[in-house]
Each structure stands twice: as C-alpha cells, then as structure tokens.
View 1 (cartoon, rainbow, N blue to C red):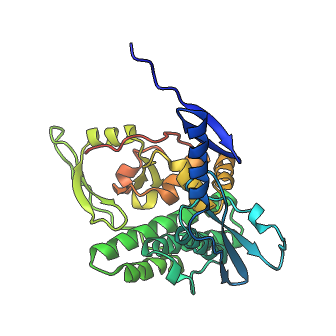
View 2 (view 1 turned 30 degrees about the horizontal axis):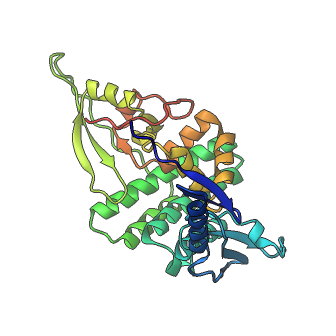
Length: 322
C-alpha cells in the first residue's frame, strides 16, 4: 500500500508555508510573502460631500488585501486609519469602486462619483435612495418604524416595477432609472381596475395571468393554477405588497451575506451584526421586500392566498418551476 505524501507546515515571518520538507515549506512561505508584497501599494482618496474614503492595501496572508474606510473629518481624526480598514477586495480598482458606492449611500447621492461606479451600481443606488427617501418621509409624518418600513418597501417594489417596464419598453438603463426614481416623488398610484368576476364551471381550472419581474430581464408571461400557487408557497414565495399582488422569495443561498454587504460595504462583520439585530423574521422580510430579484405579480386576489412576508420564516429554497 502506497503511503500518503507527507506535508510539512511551517510559519516564517508570520506566513504559513507548506511542502514535503521543512526547507521546502519555508521556501513556500517566502514565495507567499513575495506575492503579498508585490503589485501596487499607492493609496487612493475619494472626497464626497464632506466625507473622505481612504483606500489602502494591507500586507495580509490572503488574496484580498485592499480595503477602505469612510471618514467624516468633522468628527473623526486619527493617525492610524489603516487599523480601521477591513481588507475585502482583490484589486485597488475594486476597492475604489466599493468606496465610491459607500460614499454615495452615506451622502444619498452619487453625483460626482459616476466615473467610479458601474451601471448596475447606479441602478442599485437609485433603488436604495427611493427606499430611504420614502422611509424618511413616513417617519417625518409620525409613522412607527414598522409602518415606515412598510411604506418604503411599497415604494421599493413600485420602483422595481417601473424600472423593469422601462427596460422592457426598450429604454436605456439611465432612462429606466430616471423613470423609476420618479416613483417616490409621485402620489400613491391608483389601484388597478378590478376585473369583473366571471363564474366558471367547477370542472374548469381557474387560472390567472401573471408576470415575473426580474431586473434587466424581459417579463415572462405564464398561467397559474391552484396547484401552481401551492408549489410557489412551498418554494418560499410570500406576499410582500398586497395592493399590487406581489409575492417574493429569498432567491439566493447567501442572502444574509448579501444583505450584510449591501448594508455595510466597508465591513461584512458590521453588516452581519445588523442582520442579526433584525431577527429571523425581520431579516427575511427585509430581504424579500428590498433585495429579492425574484418577484411575481399574481394579482391582489391571489396574493391573499400567500403567507405574509412579515412574520414568515422560509429560508432559501430552490425556485419553483411553474
């Protein structure tokens, strides 16, 4: 029986190295150190609306040495800013892009930062601004936090719907964002006209037409039956906006990490702490209403058949094929 090859692990100047012998393991550690220290090291500074984002590289033993920290110079002053930076990015450009995104979130505008941001990030930010503006407006009228979140989530879905419709109509990404961003500045849209109820024989299966809204994807039409609705519920779809008959699901296995990064791009640790504070039901409800990209419009009547997003725990489940 052939013996398994032996692997020796050593630590050299703080870096682990591996190899069949102690010498080769040390040489491996030296190679890793050289890799960590090679490449660009120039820091980058972004200023935006009184804020400064400091982008730095740190000598870490992994492939994501770049990080950033947003500093409000009117409040913070430190000679050891690098101690605050949590390296999470592989390249300087990626870290600068993340820093610009964070600055835009903090200032509620990306004006002046567009050269550093991707078109997809501009879309996400416009969506984020719409939610934040609606939440602030609701709170200013004396609404509770839960009520304000509900109103903001309704605006959020209206934004997504308007954006998807504009894209489907052939509008550019910028034009679609402009149309969708006008949603939170408009009065509440009138409820869709209710279709007259038409009696059907019991032998006929009732069905409704629905449209699956997905960002930057053409709307997909299909037919729902009672069995389809049951299958969708089993797959995690919950009612998120009863007025328009919208249902959503947790559409990614790493949904908690995604929420954390969206909330705190500068620190996944801070983001996960925020997710934990929301609690199991609150975090899932927040994701379905704000972050889910799998939202179906089933109509107000059938929407009532789905469990409410608030208070329902489903976790991530594979999407239904209907």
